[in-house]
Length: 296
Image 1 (cartoon, rainbow, N blue to C red):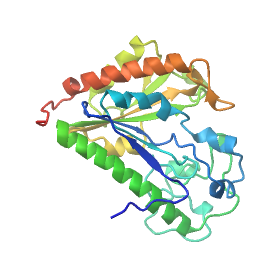
Image 2 (spheres, rainbow, N blue to C red):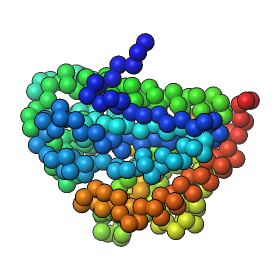
Image 3 (cartoon, rainbow, N blue to C red):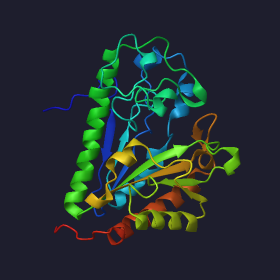
């Protein structure tokens, strides 16, 4: 059956495959989308630059070259401001819609209260996105034509990887504003690793990544202020051989956060990031608790 997706985003996501997958790792960049078609802009009260404040800008470009080393990557082309893949599928704010939502919608989560449900109400700094209330049917369309196909593709990559290698590691790649950390916690780290406080990923995998990022000159924190979102929680099941870890990269290291353009530090950060991930891909089979690899 052909994949039915939203026609205003063509394609809505991209899978980049290595020539041969040699590592039990899948890379994912759900918030890197930067396509803002006229149909979206006409519905928003914000400018394209204001809408881009919620992007994990350029993360797909920073991480993408690692696929040549043996791991596939999935990334969205549609923006997070249109639909957030790192939420439950029915995490919706009833104040945004012109009619009642289905009874099964999760309308009371803390993320919905903050305007950051699966269809966000606000972007960074609390700016309202939409000119008018949306119809419940619009929410259903976005979930059916973007959210569900994306997560089907991600599940297939993870399942295929686990079938081949005996286990799978999902590396969920994000970026964070340089002002993310409350002042009482000090400066925002360069890298935040999130493994849901050890529940979504083997401690050996997290410890290896933390060590290698530190050796590469990055200031690293674990789980504070980001422990991982829906994707890390939903896909991480270490006892079942599926591990998920979130990487947050400080945007101030590689981009101008006002103009959302690559900055002078881009080449250095990109090179160090790729070196760390290359080492992780090579080490992952030995770090996994269950190391029985499927026969080629």
